Length: 168
Image (tube, rainbow, N blue to C red; front, side):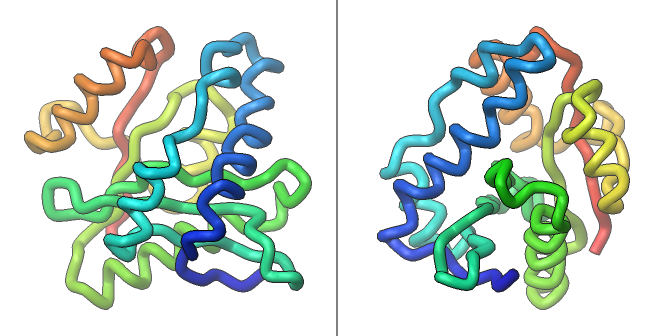
């Protein structure tokens, strides 16, 4: 699976990947998450223009997974990583995370961070297998606290969530 930067023409496909990946949340009683709309195209384009958006593509150069990140409290923060269900369980998500870790290391950034659902099998337990560890709330920086507040305002705190960190 090849990883490359997101192109403008990829942006609507990222939304399709996100919608497809989100369907699994119906199966575990989280329909609000499953039915949540993906980021708007203009927001995805902001990550693309900043050089903080990557896709894993099929042999035909069609995106099957994507990752967007942002600079948060001195680290690269994974805003979203999604894999289309037709391409799941092939190590694609891990490859995108490893790609981001390599970029962070190249730029002297000490770690990757993310927020995730603590009890969803393909969330916190998966990220733990990818080298992320829970980050104590007392160690959160100001930007991370802002993320926590935005997530709560969006209703995500209905389910246990946590910050995780992976040193690079």
